[in-house]
Length: 224
Length: 284
Image (cartoon, rainbow over all chains, first blue to last red; front, top):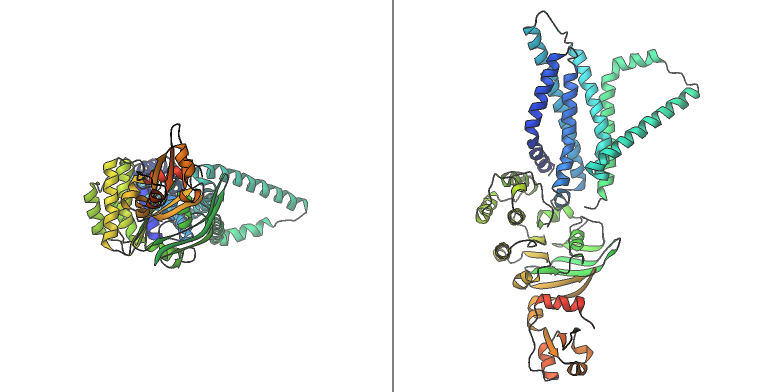
């Protein structure tokens, strides 16, 4: 059943193919034109992750949510499918960006031996994972917002939620500082250097999981 | 045996109350759900399909509609007036998607229906006319050989020729297997006169009439009389009456009885629309 929903969304997204090719070409040119080559994978990952969420708009435009509920598919599967699509698009987009950046960087180094760009695989990998984490954070907030308020209103509500989270973070930081807690920056840096990537990936999964639970709770009782 | 059993289904919205709806859809029958726009037909269908949360119980094909929802929906074909899978897909892509929802999806039947309806396989649905869209929805709804069809306003906004074609499809669907049933909502009552076995009439969220269509068309009658003649008719012998400037019109559920009892020479045969109007506008 999830396969059917995925197919439906992928067919909907197929209408984006021309725009996608243009975006990738644009990113390719941008990668060539700059030494900040590592951003290529991040930008393409973000595009992939964000485009996957436009399937909500397609569903709204076709008023398909009500019809989908008449098919042999549970509400849980409907919610799960959106997460599979979002995660899949982010991972595939980032992977594609990773490969594209490597390819273009090496081609350019071959063509411009006098202007060699230093491509560190480790840095490119770290940047890609960092970018994926950023996308997962936005998706984890945006998907429940869309399930609750719809794709138009959901975007506005998402910004409000992010704004509130930043405020809460700042207030918490302020109180921690006032309470006299001292953070061992050196220790923190060592932990981040050794386990940073694993932590980011784990955190992404935790965020997606919590986000999925919230989305399902919203959609379980939603009336179409 | 009943394909659908609806018992005491209620749903409250701001300014609207679907009030304790109960009726059955017998196996092999076509049941027409009629009523004005906003009377509660679509809300009833949404409650049956679990699209909205409602009170009461619904049994479909002997199973509980909430507990066995997924199982039930495998044997169900649904057409909704204003909602479909996507407008940005082609009929060919729809078939490829539906294969994954229904293990019984019959691609050959679907292709045959597309040909029969003259629907192009590779064109985006958003470019279809409303008649074409409705034909496609119907083709999709019957191509997995469902045991039950639930159709919300499948003929609204269509011209008479297309409406007739669509009614033929429903007739064919029932004729293929006599245990199949259809629940069909419409405010175009003439369509239901031709096709339905039973009529359920909803008005302001309440069922005001449920009866076999044949009974409504054969036994019901409209007596046209003067004020004096009307005053002689006992209240138990009529359902509703309407008075105009020069005459009274009286709706009865037993035209032969009233004919004999009051020596009335001519009684008109009502259409379902006439009956509906008497219930909505008439007095008691």
